[in-house]
Image 1 (cartoon, one colour):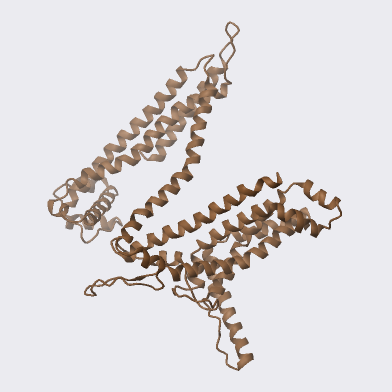
Image 2 (cartoon, rainbow, N blue to C red; image 1 turned 90 degrees about the vertical axis):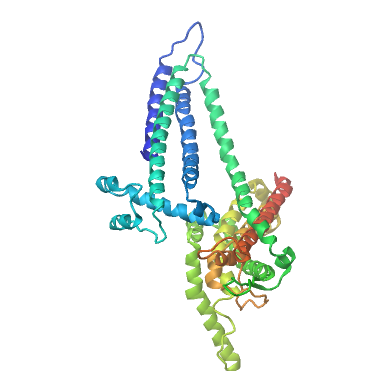
Length: 496
C-alpha cells in the first residue's frame, strides 16, 4: 500500500474519531454542579491528536529507517571482491541493484514468476527492456538474487508498516475516545500539543541553518587540508585545473580574490541601480500616491519579483548586452571614427543593470512597508509646525524609518550577492580583477556551479573548492543579515 493511501486511511480514522468524540462530549451532562471543562471541539481535537501524532511519527520514522536497514542487509551479501573495493564502487553496485529491483516490479505476474536467483542477467535484460526499463551494461548475474531479496524486504516492510500505522491510528483514536470525561482538561492538553508543534516549526529555521553549515563544513575542512587557506583567501589567480591521466596531478590555483571582487563589484552596481529607483518608488507610493494609484502601481512593481531570474538572464543576454555594445560602438565611432565597442556584451555593467532591475521590487516593497509604519502623529506634528510635505519627508519620516530602510538594503544586498543565473548569462565566467565596469567578471556563485557541473567525484580540490566557496558566501550573507538585525534593534526604540 502506498504512503499516500496510508495517510488517507489515518486521516479518515482521525476524522471518525473526531466526530464520535464531539458527539460524546456534547452528550455529557453536568453532575453535582460540575460543568464540562472544555468545549466539545477540544474533545474532538484531543481524539484527533491521539490518532494522528503517534501514527504519523511511526510512519515518518519507518520511512527513514527502513530503507537504511534494507540497504545494510543487501550490501552485507555483496561478493567479497566487491566489498574489497571502494565505498563508491559499492554505492554504484547498490544503485544498479535498485534499478534492477525497480524494473522487476513492473514485470507482469507471469514473467515475474519465471525470475529466480539463478536467472542470468542476459536473459532478464530483454524482458525489462520490453517494458521500457533500461539495464546498465555493468549489471552482473550476482545482482539478480540481491534485487529479488531487496524487493522481498521492501514488500515485507511495506506490509508491516501499513498494519502498524493503521492499527496505531485506530488504537490511538480509541484510547483518546475512552479517556473523554466531563472534567477532562482537553483544552489544556490540545494547547500543549499545539505549543510543541509551534516550537518544532520555529526550530526548522535553526536546524536548517545548522544543516547547511555542517553539509559544507567537513568538505571545506578536507579542502583546506589539501590547499593552504592563505593561498585560497589571499590568492589573486583563479585557475583550477582538473587533473588528467599523465598530467602529474597539477591542481592549479584557487585564489578567492578575483571571485570576491567580482561578486562585490557586480552587487554594488546592482545596488546603485536598485536603491535610488526602489527608494523613490517607495516614497511616492507611501507619501504622494492616492489609494487608487497605489493599488495599481504597487502590484505592477512587485510583478518584477515574481519573474524567474533565468528570464532576467535571457533579457540581459539578448537585449541589454547587445544594446550597450552597439551603443558604445556608435559613441566610439562619433568620437574617433573607429566603431569598435568599448562595452562588452557580457560585462559588469550589463549584469549589474539587469540585477538592479530585479532588485527594485525588494527595495521598494520593504521600504514602503517601513515608511508607512512611521506613526501618523510624527507627520501631523511636522506639518502642524509649518513644514512642507517634502521637508516633512526628508526631516521626519525618512530619519524615523532609516534603521528599517538600512536593514532592507542590507537584506537586498544579500540577495544580490547570492544571484547566479543573471551573472552567468550577463557577466560571463572570466575570473579577472578589473575596475573597468565595461569588462567581464564573474562571481562566487557562478564558480560554485561551474565546479560542480558534470559527473564528478568529491575527492579532488577542484570539486571540494565549491564547498569552501559556498561556506565563504554563507558567512558573508550571514554577516550582512546579522548587521541588519543589529541596526534595527539598536535604533528602533527611538521612534516608538
